[in-house]
Structures are given as C-alpha cells and as structure tokens.
View 1 (cartoon, one colour):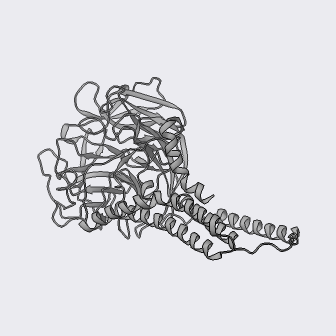
View 2: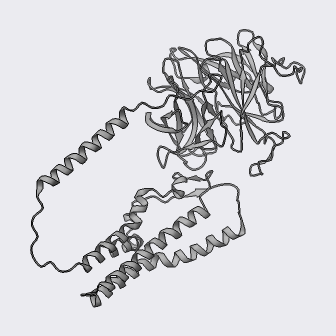
View 3: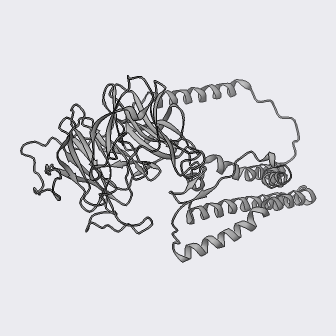
Amino acid sequence: MAALLAIQQFVLNLLILFVPSLMASEIVSCGWMGYDAGPEWKRELTARLWQIDAFVTPAIPVAMVLCIWLIARRGADRPRVHKWTAFAGVSLICLDYGLTRAQALLNPMPEEASCSVDPATFNAFPLEYVGWMFAPAVFVMIGAWTGMRPPMRSARRPLPWRPVALVAAVTALLVAVAVVIVRLTPEPPPAVAADGTPRHALVLKGHRLAVLDLVEGGEPNAVGAPDERFYQYTGVVRDTTPGRYLAAVTTAGNGAWGDRSSRIYQISVHGDGDAEVGEQVGGDYDGIIKDLAVSPQGRIAYSRAVGKRDDSLEIDRTFVGLVDDHREWSAAGGQGFGAFGDGELGLHWRDVNTLVFRGPSPKAGSPRLASLDVRRPGSDLSAAGTLLTMGGLEDGTALTVPGETRMVLSQVGVERTWDQQIVVVDPSRKQPIGSAFAAGCGNIAAFTIDRSGRYLLVSVDNRAGQFVGDSPEPVCGNAGPYQVFRVDLRPAADAPRPTPHAARYPGEATPLNLPQTPVWSGKSSVHAIAW
C-alpha cells in the first residue's frame, strides 16, 4: 500500500501523457510585477534544496519497491530487516516533506501575485496535504509492526461488544456536548475605542481583506479567501449589525476585465480582531463588483463592471443592481472614478429609495453625483438624476452623512495630483461648505463615516508620486508610508482644533479646521475602509 501511494502520482503523470482527458485538474498560472531578489544566501540555499528534492522525490517510490524486495527475500524471522526498511522509508518521506516546506518558507509565492487560484494556497500546508504526504509512512510503519509480530499461537477471545458500545456512546456524548457548548457560547461583542468608535476596521490591502486595529496599530491582520478561485477582494461595506460586514470577491480571470466572476460574502469581525468569512449572499455575478452599499433597512446594492469580449482591457458596461430585488441598471463604458472610468463609483444609500454614485454627466464632460430612485421604471443608468455637478479639480466620490443631507466629497481628480482633500457639501447649495480634511503631500486612498455620522476615517497614501515597485520611502517628511486619520465632523465647542489656515488656491473651500487624530500608520496600503 505504501509503495502504491508513493508511485501513484508518477503513474498518473505517465498516463496523462497518453490520455490527456485523465487530467482532472486545471493548469494553474501565476504572474506578478516586480522582483525582490532577497539575500544571496537565501537564493543559493533555495537552489540547493530544489536540486536535492528533485532527487529525493523520485527516489521514494524506488526505495519502497526495494524495501518490498528486501523484506520478501530476507524478512522472514528477522525483525531488524523490518525495522531498518521502515526507518529508511519514513526517513525519505520526512526528508521530502522537510525540503518542500523549507523551499516554501525561503521562496514563498508573492502575496500580490495574480493566479488562477489563490496564491496563498502555494504557501500553505493544510492537514489534508500533510496527511497525504505522510500516508505512505503510516503504511510503512504498520507493515513493519505486522512483520515483527510473533505468529498467533491460538485463537483470541472475541472482544465483548458491550464495553465497546459503552465507550463509543460516552465519546459521542462528550463530542455532542462540546459542539453544543461551542455553538451556544456567545461571540465577543465588537470592541470599541476610548471615544466610543469601533476599534477595528475592515480594509482592503491590495487584493486582500484585512482587519485594522485603530488602537494598538500594527500591520493589518489578513482574512482568508472564501474559495481558492474567488480570492481577490474588490469591495467592502459594513452591514446593519455592528461587527458584521459584506465583502465582494472576484476570480483572477485573465488579469484584466475578461473572464471575471464575483461573489458577495458575509464577514464577521469579533472583539478580539479575528475575522470569519460567512455565507455567500446572492449568486455569482459576471465581471468585477466595485462597490457595495447597505441601507439601514438592510437592502444590498452593488456596482459591477464587465469587460468587452474582444478587448478585455476596456469596460463594456457598468451595472448598478439590487441583490434581493434581482434588478439592475446599466450604462455603456466605465462610469467609475479615474481617467478610464475603471475606479469605484462611491455607491451608497442617501435615503430609503435613493442610491447616489459618481458618474459622467450625460451632456457635459464634467463628472457628477448621480441620484438613482430605485422605484422608477427602466434600466438606463445614464437616466439617473443629477444631485451635484463637479469640476475637473473636484472629481471624486462622496458619502452622505448619516441622519443629514450633508455629504463628504473627496476631491482627488486626475488633474489634482497634490493637495487632495475631502470637503463637506450640501447639494442644495451647489457648492462646498468647507474643507474637512487635507492630505497635503499625500494622496487620499479611501474614506468612510461611522454609523453615528460624527467621525470621518481617512486613509492617506504618503508615497504619492512614486512609481510602483519603489521602496516605501515617505515623501511627506517623517510620516509613515501609509496613515489613517480620524476626523471629528461635529466637534464640541471646547474641543482643541488644528491651527487655522487659509485655502491653498482661489475658489477652494475654506478649511473648517476640524479636529483630526492619526490612529494608524504602517507599511500596507489601505485603499478601501468599512468602519
């Protein structure tokens, strides 16, 4: 049995050469930008280990066959033969596992790699994999133990069934009690900071979902993917219950907009900062889901973009839809933020029946905040009303302050490389009330508002202006590469405020000089926040 397990992969590979239809699994491809050579000793050691493993792996089935031959020829009444053959077989299997594990640790698959399956699976050693690798070793030891046993002199008494049944019943009862205790034990409530705001935020770090601790700091704690194919997270939003979130995840496709499929999953963040991926919400959606929005009543909306069939580098259509209503509105091309319309839309609920999102104006070239009444008939996304028209330097996404008509709008257009800011606007006044936050030399990567509508959380990229792949050296003095700030939108009268300063350019919104506190600094880019 041990020999069969050891040689089965080689036999299967040989058969696949003659019968390709036997290949049940798909070919996995990976690609990534940038190259980190690492220390010279690490590269040399990895190369040496690979050479050794290339010899050890095919040597295992050969050794198993030789062990069988040795036992058949000289194993009778010789326990030492069984011991040494078992030792040799188990040692080779352990050496093969150790070499494989060492290579994975020395040369892991980059986290930012784009693969047809989750690249994290290449660095993981789950119990199923370990069990399969050591299965031949188990059978080798069983065979050696069987060969060293003395021959049975007389028939043994049958094992009484009552004690066995009693042990089985007690074991089953203990397992059932343990399961009930685990299921009935309440989850720890979401943790809060000293000022009453949530301690943890769920963020996107590249294509990964992670939990950010706004009190203790530290690098974001990554959340696993729900499926090995659906592993690239693209959107996140808080749900109606504290500690509950929704996250959108997509397949890698062809690396651009082609062959993409997306899903929405429930995410729970516990009081200790651990996150758990829950059930899928809705079905599978073509394309990439860019935005998620949940109303106070629990209605889930999303936006998704689908690439062209003949050119996967371009967006064919943009959709805005409702999960439970199974209804969508669409428009040609990209409607999102950015020079090519491939960014997020800033989709959110303004009231019970109105969705607001960023989109191009159907008549003028200026971007706008569109207002979509989900009760109206039709499916033309471009027919949505205009809530606010923005200028070139004012392009960005917006969020409605909960319980108010005011909105916070990011001014991060492609023409505004520096001095990006977030302004408070009232659509009825058609102009900003004032500037709530200025990023200075950095770029605004993401922002969100807490449930109460009092605090604004802003992620700033201080590596603005650097090329992808450069070392994370900040361009903003001694500031960290990436920072997160909390801004008080409704400060008390006696709250300390930053030093007042005037607008940087004529016509810009007057700074409101709102209190702001840096709550996190690190080396990981945070480009989407749910809080």
